[in-house]
Length: 173
Image 1 (cartoon, helix red, strand yellow):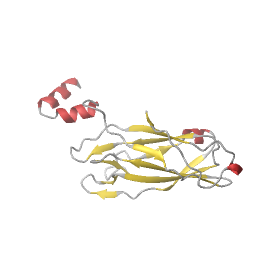
Image 2: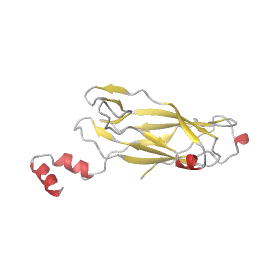
Image 3: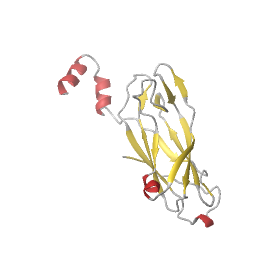
Image 4: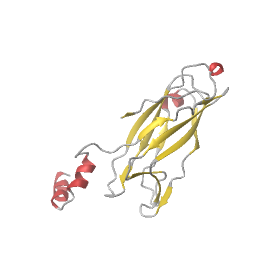
């Protein structure tokens, strides 16, 4: 592997090699947050939205691409699922078809909607796995996961009101 990286650097691919190894500055990441005011409760469900922001001159994937090997945005909610609940996607951004990358891509800000049942009464984590690529250099960075905490306020379902403001604490893993 070292000889391959050395050869790539000698051929002038140093920036690409360094980017893929994680060198030369910080690797670009998405920003993610629970959309303020998006949490809604009823007797059995919790509805909420998560916004992601892809950095300028980059894109993420909404599907696996025509060849099936790309890594699209995916969400998991282990605390809810481990507790016997279910979280389903109720809305997703359409993105845009990019024929060059042969996939449905996401650029800029987009919002994903979810429904959890039964409605969690405790805060829980949303894990977002994704891969982003640079539109200019076409360097794709290794997949990573970021976590957003959905703060449900810890209120019993009967005491919660529609439109409860959501707070989020994103962190990279």
